[in-house]
Length: 316
Image (cartoon, rainbow, N blue to C red; front, side, top):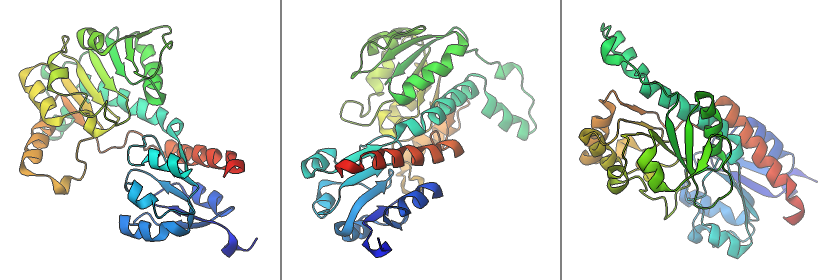
């Protein structure tokens, strides 16, 4: 088949070169990681496939132009930027690849937690300024603690697997799952996690149920002054409420890989005030949405997504 006769696939984000090469064996590939919403809308009528991450919203208005679109592939997890109801109505298949970065997210969550509990990041900064402070950097062991995991899908369950090496008790809640308790993992309700957990880690998609799930009311109900860990979506945690809870001593620390607004150059004075207050704290670790972005996951997400697309070619 001539190259010009191959159906068009638009890739709107940076991805591993392996995926571009494999797609090019079956499709005409337009790799445009800098594509704007308007540019994609103009190109979409000619496309049969679309590969996205979290940069562009694929809404019903855009999909109205997608007369030839048969599938959308999401590199990673979380479909909140894709109007899946509109896709279903138009017969557009949607694939994601959360299996590809679950190890990376789980390891990053554990790494941030250990870093915070042992003041690794803050004490290193002190050494860089000529301070050698041992007593003020006395750490807290994770061993034997109770860890609450909210969301027990790909990343939550993988985080639980890593934690078991520390002989912790794991209280897990997932509103869509039951019957997953095993070994150190016990099924629990959010209220039980708030009452007993020394660490609470969020691994949920962003939807109406999880939007600002970790807010003032949630934090005030926590009884063990837990460390809050969020590697899911920024708007799961209300940042100003988290900052207030830290100031009041309602929680003992925070590990955040995601923020409500990750475009720092667009911050309002109030947003900047909250973030500045957090980054100055020695009990807070913040990283720039890199938990699922390891070298290995970069390739694995591509491989898994491609296998899902090709595996369903018969129905395309």
